[in-house]
Image (cartoon, rainbow, N blue to C red):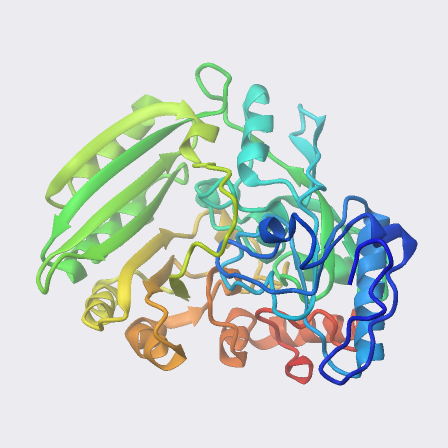
Length: 465
């Protein structure tokens, strides 16, 4: 295959040839012989071996790529893998593949403040959240997202978005006021409350199951920070814990009673059979020191401190953005659930999981607040009542051992964040989109993608596997 002549001599396992690339894509195509192939074949979580990477920079190119992927499957007579990525940080690794096609929209990364007073910002899906934070900072604006700046906007903004403002602003999907999405037939749609409200509902939390989102209209929030520079108060605390169930219960009581401005993320690492090292990243939205100080002090008193600092900084400095080249460098795998309560039982479940040699570390993220104000049926994210996200980082020792290591925590889960997991099984999809939410999402996906083109990663379409 060459990028100049198309793809006529590429053959699928069936022996059928791929059709030639349309003219609009030929200058965007990278094949294994291309000098840039090594730079675009992989994501953060996986090394891919695609036969074709299409570096789309316009909606019409994404639409042409989607149509082409459908044509390839039809010509090949089989489900040639088809993946798409924005930032390439996706935790499941499904934004790359072997032997198929990848559409990469990282070049679609424009960020435009359209109304600073109302906090309205248009963001293309290939931008990263670190760049979004930096663009908003001069206006004293911030937008809830994840906790890592290299993450792409598209994957997170369609899947959920559990970030440092979740208790004051809700999920990232709750800040979407409109989106451009390209469906399986190559049609380009702008969706919002007035335009295809079903598809608008599905793109907010349904992940990649209904199409490729290429642009969003978000409503950010003004922080009213002291210097007008989108500053927050960041507390970093380290604890050495011998009673993990007791600590988890105390942490839960503390964050539940804290004002919505405070969010807490915990990283838990087993030291030995008795002790667990815990690193807390607590972020207070804004710079109200008088209101934040007693909350920070009570958070520091949760356990035996090994380190502690609290400082004020512009939000972009709180979100690490290393801009690393993705080479499949992260080999760890993740599991997560949403839990109704972070209590002693959850702490004991973490301890049991740590006793399994496959578990490397654990994670607890506070939920609630503004996230829980949104009705359960308002978006394709059904988990509105849970208090915490509980996750483990596990060694890649195979599905069976990974499942065994997570089982104590999995039993307590009443939901899941599908995009923050390496588990793409049907059971994981049912937990992420349960009941009426899953049924509605499945119906919409079947309407806009009847052939199941968007079948990579976690999804509800069992017929598309």
